[in-house]
Length: 230
Image (tube, one colour):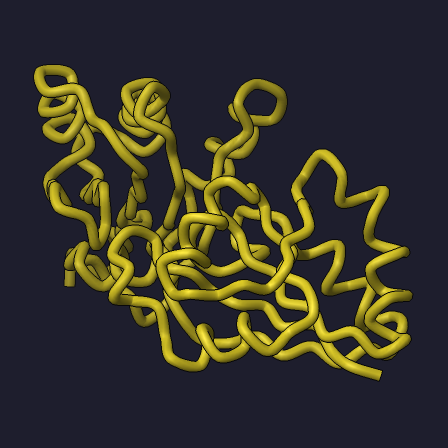
């Protein structure tokens, strides 16, 4: 019986690809890719000729059982997403869980993910934090934001450029306009930037200068008013 490898891929800069990741992708029988067109460019860059199989959020429910069977019969497979670590706001959880339930070994390689550099670069407390990923678009959004308004730990969110202003406006409403936060975009890429300020100031900035690229928002937790008065 072989195993499933979860292989992180660069979120922008191809130099962040690890030597181990390249070796594994060359040695496995199949590479499961979120988008074979995107991953095809990556594999070509590193001279990886391993066959690819499409595995994404629209077909993973249908393919998980057959993939687990194939791995149990001896195939080694590697799962990659378009960028970053599989299963972090990307496909991967369902297959990983199914492999664990079937007794199939899993090996997750360390590597690129967007929220860690964004958190460290934010200047906000990182000894304790929560990762929220993408907020609900409609149903459950207000409930979630109301709950998070009282969260004392630093919070991390993913967001798309065209929804950034809406999310920043919601943060001003539910967390308060003075809540500290940072927006990191295009991490590891040519036009990487991090804007750190209050929720209102960051909202004003991106209202005047619309954002492009992949975005991570890091928000300070609710301050301990009792502690601050001592």
